[in-house]
Image (cartoon, rainbow, N blue to C red; front, top):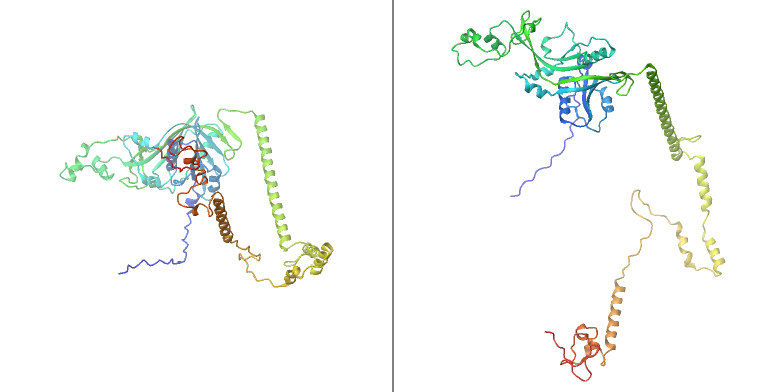
Length: 508
């Protein structure tokens, strides 16, 4: 039975359906977004640190942003407007130090920090006595807390405003406490000028409750196999161990109802669980523009007012030259485009002075006229007269017969075909010439072989047993292989002795 083959599937041209694009709400669109990238030398720990920093900035950051060495900072700046990015954090590693640059998009300022110490999130969690990580807390933005940023100096105010603007603002009258599950702490030390960055997860535990009830409310139910009834567990709850003591300073009164027994107008204990990363850094300089502007503040380099003014003038001059160069490039580009259009109009016959579309201009007419004058009228009589003057005789009729048929119609050749009017070269079949050469060569060889013999007809017509000197000429066996004084007699020049019968001697 013949096996049925598969029928080919025909591709159906289904109508394209454009998916509806849902617009983001105004709160999400206006919230500050960040890019976190790394530059410089490659290091696995620095890459891990940048990913932990992205996780800290969630949800308003590009968590899965892929960066390559070929990407420039300018590429991310161009994309910042489309993705509503307001800040960009760049970790740059050099053989000497690790730096963090916080850039306000798209035109600065740029704050450069030198990283003195850092710890990854996995190391911080592994060293904690009681590990606590809640994945749901990363769905909302963290609460930023600033400490000791109220000192003198414009650089402190600029740092404080930059860190605050990196996170979405909080409206105290409309905020929900259930969304505040994380906090970022930035503490400034005015003596050492170091900034400590910490990242915590926030939890609430009800206070003034029996330990057994507290465990049930907080969903930390222990093993109840030792108790006969739930009442025994509640009454003997004081016998259970408490892993963490309550601090009275951490007790707060909640204005809203929360989950897990945290009710409004009741006290709850506020607990912080560090989830990393840790960064200790120091401000080095502040630039006006995007990483290449005027230096507004430097930590250890101070310049006088005269030097600052000279640098400003030099920058203004360079900026002016750059703008002028850019303008010249644009003008040259426009000029080239205009010249191309004019040249295209001249060559195609479209446009130009006094020439309408589809008409021949004065320049083309002059060219056609010169070509006609150069060619002239060609006739057979001129050729015949030239022949008589040069040779002195009348030409043959067959000599100019091909010129008479020059007015024949040429065949129509379709456009794009490979047909040519040139005559093809005749195929050279030289097989007969080769056969004739072989026949003549065989005859010559027969004649040469028959010249040296005494009998006619060559060596093939001789009698059996008769030999001549030429029969053995050119054979090394008979020229040099014979022995003197042997049975065959003395040999001279490879031939036998006249009058005696020659016998070859075999070598042993």
